[in-house]
Image (cartoon, rainbow, N blue to C red; front, side, top):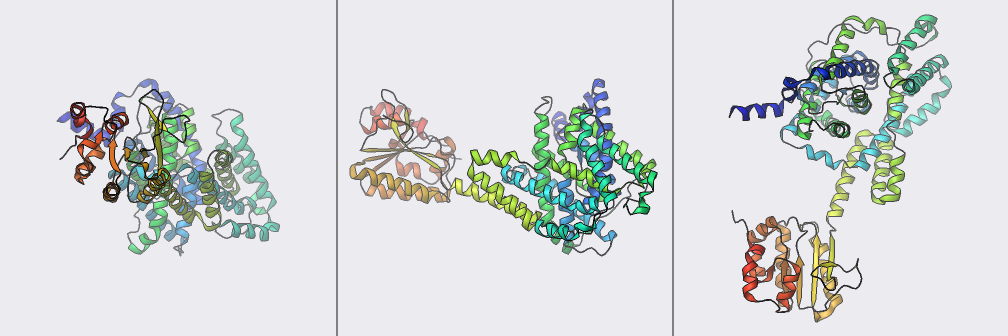
Amino acid sequence: MKNNFLQSVKGYIPILEWLPNYKKSDLQGDLSAGLTVGIMLIPQGMAYAMLAGLEPIHGLYAVTVPLILYAIFGTSRQLAVGPVAMVSLLTAAGIATLNASSPEQYLLYALSLAFLVGLIQFGMGLFKLGFVVNFLSHPVISGFTSAAAIIIGLSQIKHLFRINLPNSEHIQEMIVAIYQNIGDIHWITFGIGVVGIIIIKYGKKIHKSFPAPLVAVIVGIALVSGFDLTSQGVKIVGDVPSGLPSFSTPSFDLNTWRTLIPIALTISLVGFAESFAVAKTIQAKHKNYRLNANQELTALGMANFGAAFFQGYPVTGGFSRTAVNNDAGAKTTLSSIFSAILIVLTLLFFTGLFYNLPSAILAAVVLVAVSGLIDFKEPVHLWHKDKADFAMLVATFVITLTLGIETGIISGMVLSLLVIIYRASRPHIAQLGRVPGTNTFRNISRFKNLEVRDDLLMVRIDGPIYFANVEFIKDKLDLWITEKGKKVKMLVFNMESVSNIDSTGAHELNEWINTWRKSGMDISMTSIKGPVRDVLNRWALLESVGSDHIFLDDNTALSAFDHAITEETLEKYSSYATQTNSK
């Protein structure tokens, strides 16, 4: 009993699983990775906070308590949690609809959004709803991510060029505004931004552990300080408060919640999809632990609670940081705790160093990060392999670019569901014939020279029989029966690929059987799975078909039709074909 309780607790708090068995040999890798990612997080956190419409300090707050909470509750040993470009843009887009009257109110909305994201993700984990993210298909995520990356990039043009641009997530509005204000470029600011982009983009070629974003920050600060560029109009971060984040409280106003819930749901799903995708990719390289989707949701929910109550904003697992964390040698989530400690030390002692940090450098950090999110290969690949998925990717991409982030992801989810419903409503149905000289049956539309009888129609339905596809199935069967004419004496249903039958499917199947038998055509069934037999039994369909018309396989059904098998033999194996769990 005690052992079962401990195992249950470890399931909810994974750190208790690995920490007691922690190896000293792992410490060097965790420490190195933690410091490397921590150094990355300083400029990234500040840049992403600015993208979210917050003061840069809140990006640092978002990588303290949330990191520690994920380290305790997460099942991935290498996932690096914190602010990411996508979630930052979604945060800005969601809060913009509330028209905050002051920076304090804007922060309150950001805290409330983090709380709602935490609540949704924690609730989904608690009720084991991790499967919901499967409705975000890969083409939808690819189209949405590429479009969002373009929008994020354009949103940073105002900091890179130091021109006035409206806060918008519609590409047409942003392009028009850039065109109208392009003549006001501040060339010194632009030059600093370009230097930052070059350092961040190509610094990694020096060495994979080269802290390119931090070097760009140092170079930017040095240029501003050394040449007094603020007097020449270069915009800087300015005062960055020192000290640890104080306890904060999100808003519990229902009207605010009602406005934020759509974007909170979007962030919850997109954030989890991004986080779990990279976690799975990295876990494939490490066979010493298993990922748990529902526990990952719980852990991300806890991390967002930490952001809500300690002046952060919504967080999730990031692609680039996780890759760096893994490459730097992270073995456990202790690396995240080391990253959080480094951020805490920065908050306590080094925030004053960022006073002269140019906003253009933070824009460069964001621009380089999101440039890697634009996927050119996937549309080309899908165009050649799957036109339907290509159309879904392009539709999501265009809708996101023109109508906004939230509309884009919701449209993508709806498109995914419509495609699922469409495909499920048109299951593959095969007419079967015997391979000469064998007891094997194959699809007559795929194989030539099969033995096909005029007095027998043998079909296999590959999928469930339910309300959305019964008409399609009936139409296909009627067409084949008409093509054969009145010669058909028996219709054999091969049910080996039928996984489920709902009430509509059972009702319709019963109607078909009665109608066909009245017209003089008999019915039999073969290879019925146990759960499907249970459903047929509950709806009295086994009785309707008759136990003497239900067979183990197609060959037995054919032999019985031809009276080429004895009653004793049929009865001997009947229970294997008809037995149900009547409970």
